[in-house]
Length: 73
Image 1 (cartoon, rainbow, N blue to C red):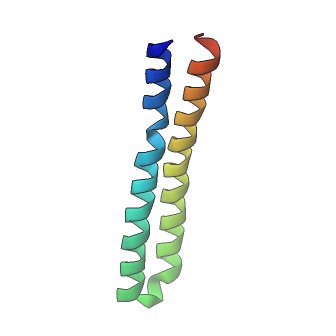
Image 2 (cartoon, rainbow, N blue to C red):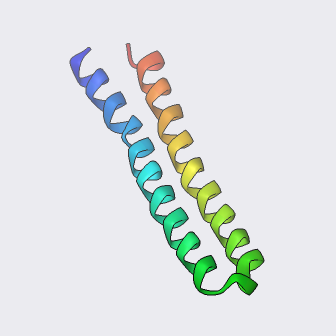
């Protein structure tokens, strides 16, 4: 059971990486908008796409953790 918990814990760590990535992307987008306010629409589109992909990675990690816990007992 210990190895299962360790595997599930490692799978959930993808959420930490996604959170850090989204935070960095948001700060860079805010800097870019401050430098070029006329490009706000394009910057927001790229930011939302990147955040969605990063969040999907975190959700995949969570799903894998649940599958590990439920099916490897």
